[in-house]
Image (cartoon, rainbow, N blue to C red; front, side, top):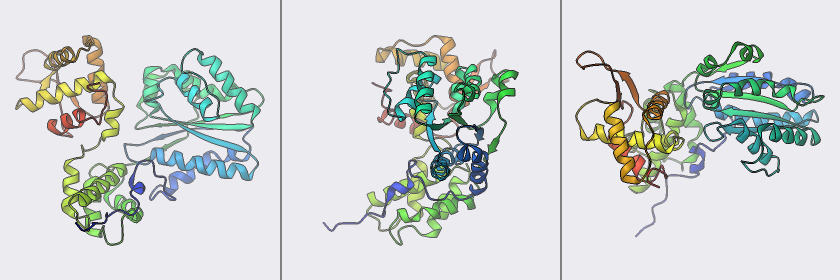
Length: 390
């Protein structure tokens, strides 16, 4: 059989890990970030900075931080300063203690995740930074997860600059979808926070088209035409999400290869859209706890089996308990289930609302509006989220 070449030249250019030379439609925000950190670049031992970056999923927050890390290291060197960036995801590193362990590891120092207090780890990190004359900028991605769990963590972050006496060794960037997490902290913490904020808006369709066009070298010549790219941009424009747009084009390319098509066609984009849950991706599911995944699986199974748009939290709890029993897992009690349901709603994966007229009593109704129950079940059960049935 004749060999059919792939439509891709370098598919890595479409993956989340790829760091482009330029970020379309974020030049102004990037320049502002560089301006905020200019003092650190020029005088790393005496200056410190804290910046808040907020914006919806796929608006370029993490990408800006990565690009800033490159810039700070290069520009710092021009002034004889060693400035390093550490990016941590607070959904994974869920405590400041875990962040300190990761920071030490990034400097070549191995510390176990348990056995040392936060104060001991912080002291070791400060000494390491001072001895090596390093100024460390920590980008706390999804910082709201950390602050919601421990509101005092924000106060600690804002006071890191005061810990290393005689030399500044810390700066920070707080990255989140919104700044709602600030409502949970006290006034003394807010007063200590340098209110330097960069707010990113969702991308428009024409901006997403520019972003896709900037990555067209991912495809071989003639394999992705303008009309197909525009369709992807128009679909993703409903959500303003660049990550969604690039994932859509990537999946469409994979479907083209699977069908041995020499080009990515609009029908491949449409098929790719059917496989993508709008506004949240597999990556969102992978950050959930095991019990949150089981609750989500229960919600999906109930909605798939019935004809109603919503199910009650009582039905969900019953189904979740039965699922846990069948898997040999101890189910959580009502309070924790309620907390997990609220967290899933906060992340936008489910909808939760109080019942209205036509129902006896008041209860919480749970539904899915962004993805079909069938698709979500398939995503949870096929191994993408590995520990659902581990």
